[in-house]
Image 1: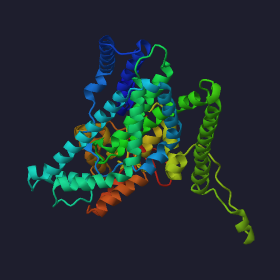
Image 2 (image 1 turned 180 degrees about the vertical axis):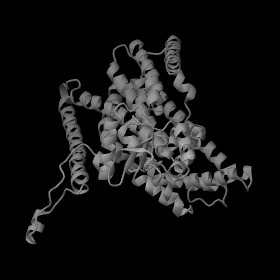
Image 3 (image 1 turned 45 degrees about the horizontal axis):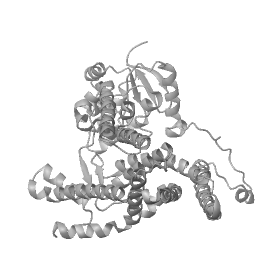
Image 4 (image 1 turned 180 degrees about the horizontal axis):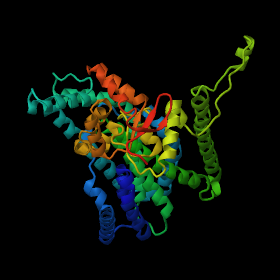
Length: 496
C-alpha cells in the first residue's frame, strides 16, 4: 500500500478497498458481522496504515502536495452519454449480473441496507458540495475588495458558478445549478441503483440453506467501489493547480475503469458459465444467456474497431505515411519513399540535429552521473527540457508547471531562483558570474540549441536588451564542445 501511494498518491483510495475486502471476507465466512469482526477489521486497517507510514516515513516527511482541500462540482457533471462512452461496455456486463444476483437472493435481499447506503452516500456528497459551494459564494464578501486574496476568491467563485448571475441570491442560483445538472441524472441514477443492489446483495439476510461464494462477494465489492469512485467527481473534486476537476476525474475514472473491468470479466463468466438451468426455466435461462452473450460480443467488437482505425489514422495518416498511389499515377508521379514504422518516437520529438546531439551525449555520459543545464520548459512540449528527458541526465529545472504540481506550496522553496539563474547563465557576458552559477549548481554540461535560442529571443521580445543574444556566443573558445551539430552544441564545463 505504501508503494502504491509513493508511486501515485491517488492510489491511497485502495486502502479502504483492502479493508473492505477483509470485512467482506468475514461476512462471507461467518454469514453475518459481529462486534468482534468489526474490531478485528479495524485492527487490520490500523496495522496496514501503521506499516504504510513506517515503511515510507522518509517520503511522507518531505511529501507536499498541490492538493489543498475539497471543491464542489456544481455545474460540470459528466453527461450520461459521455459516461456511457467511457464505461458503457462494463455497464452492459455488470447490470445484468447484478440483476441475477438480486434474483438469486430473493427475499434475503437487504433492501434496508441498500437504501441506507444510498441515502448516506448522497447526503454526504450533496452536503459537502452545498456547504463548500456556500463558503465559496460568500468568500468575496467576507474578504472585502482590494487585495490578492479577494481577487482569487472572486476568480474561484466565477469558476465554480460558471455563467451565474451574482446579483441574485445564492438559493436562486442553486436552483439554476440543479437545472444544469439534468444531463447527468441518468448516469448518476444508474450508479446509485448499482450501489443499492451491491450493498443489498452483499449484506443479504443470513440463510443457512443459501451460501454466497467469496468470489461473488469480492466482485460485488469491486462494482460498488467502482461506482462510488465514478460518482464522486460529479459532486466534489480536489483543489489543485488546475482549479478544475480534471485531475480528479482522470485519476478516479482510471481506477474505476480497472475495478469495473475486473468485475466485468467475472460477471461475464458467472452468467455464461453459471449454474446449469433445469426444469421449466431452462429455456428462458438459455435464451437470456444467449442474448446477453450476443450483446456483450457486439460491444466488445465495436470497441475493437478503435485500435485498428485509431492506429491507422495516428501512425499512417497523421504520421505522413499515407500516399494515394492511384491519384499520383494519373499525373505521372510516384509516392515518395516512406519512413518505416517504428515504436521509437524519439526522432520525431525533436529536430534531426538535436536528435543527433542527444544520441552523442548518451554515448559521452554513460553513467548519467552529471548535471546538465538547458532552457526550462513549459509543459507537454518535447522540444523543451528535451536533453534531460531523453538522456536521463538530471537538469536544474524541467517543465515548470509539473514541478509546481509535484511540490505544491514548497515549489518556491525548492526551486528558488533556478529559472532566473538559468536565463542569466545563457545571457550574461560576464564569465565571473557564469562560473559562479556553474559552481553553485555543479553543472557539467551546457546545452546551446534551438530551445535556448528561442528562450533568448522571447526575452528580447519581452523588452530585454538585444545584447542578451551575445551571451550564447560566449561559450565558444572557452568551453569544450563534446557534441555538436549544425544547430546544437553541448559544452563540457570541465575536462575529462
